[in-house]
Amino acid sequence: MGRVKKIEIQESASALLELMQQEKRALVQARLQALYLYKSGQASDYATISQQVGYERHTIGKWFSQYEQKGLAACQALEMGKHSGSRISGPALAELTEKLNSTTDYFTSYKQIHQWLQEAHGILLSYEHVHRFVRYYLGAKLKVVRKSNLKKDVAYEEKYKKSKRALIFSAPTLLWAFSPSRESE
Image (cartoon, rainbow, N blue to C red; front, side):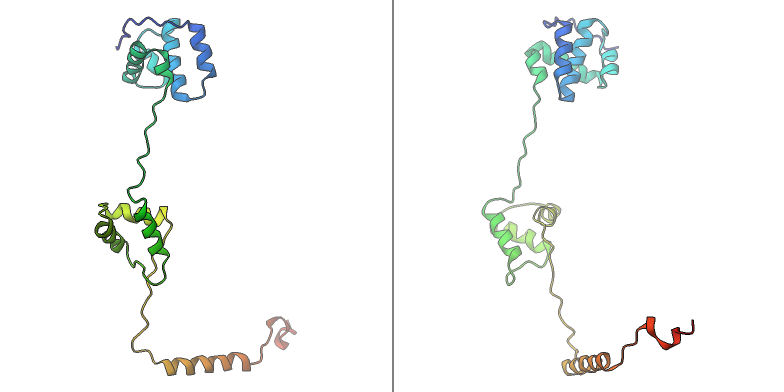
């Protein structure tokens, strides 16, 4: 079993309990609970403390080492990781959004955007990253204009449209609800 090193905790058990009850952050609350359990004598080894707190015994050991080296303030501080941000930013982002919104000079594929970022701005990213950024962050859906059939006869199409229009407007419209055949039902 992982025994706790003999650590002298300066705060009283009641002070630790009060700090633990006032704390809103779950991780800091668990750290204070571990210190409280050791100080009050309810647990004397890492395994027992880890069962009661709900964290691994190695984590409990790190918390006690942190308390021993830096004090209670270090146990109450949470170090957050920083967000590095996107590598597509500044002028590259402005030019990319401009080209995505353009009706004349536009991209037809994510691969084309991927190559353009490499050539024009020297930004080396994976295809998946470019796709995810353009599709979900910028919200762009690349639409490709489909070519019309080369064999299509335009004159025949106009003749068909006119004849169909004539059929629709010349035929009498019967309403099913008031048709003579329904009266007998």
